Image 1: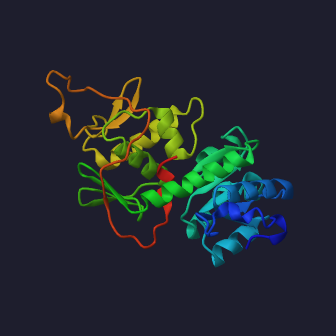
Image 2 (image 1 turned 60 degrees about the vertical axis):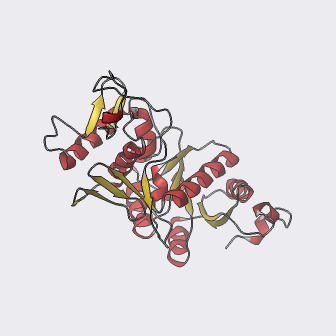
Length: 285
């Protein structure tokens, strides 16, 4: 529940005239002053906050209630962030926004299974906007089934198949591959893949993207050393082999690639999914 003393009566109407929030946010910060500022900012964008001030309170909330997004500060996570988030992911499938140092590699944040990363000094309003974006994207993508050639990805179920064979992918590999499907055969630069797959991009992060690409190729390519589906465009990034190459203008070179600044909506099937929530929000940011 929201602590009533944190908000005055005139603040609640900012959720809308019918007082129905767009979603619920679990905010885990140890600092009373900062948590009040962030909670008010979340109210301002239509997210109803519940407050946790320790790791134990986070897990208590997750056992008894449902949330659209978890806003988690590095000091709550403690010295074992991967273990902590592993426990979170065991019961919480919605997006996680990680608040920490401006250096993403601090505290092992580069390896964490999170959906977004915000620097510690980012204004509360900006953090609230990021949280709302994750919630909106999760809702939009939760019923999508992405298809590209023999690859099929069920975003709501967090499952992927290559033809009739189910693929065993890590969460980062799933997000990376889904981002490429959403690009519809266009080139996605490595920094953009890093941002979408790992939550944010950092300098000299290309090797981490290459490492995951190599692992994915071992799962889907007949010869991973000579890929035919997940392609590298030297000096630009990665793309999936185009399925509409035959429709290219006459004279277009076979290897012609387009670089897309924004990943578009993919061709997808929409199916009923009452759950409507899950890891889908971690595909776009």
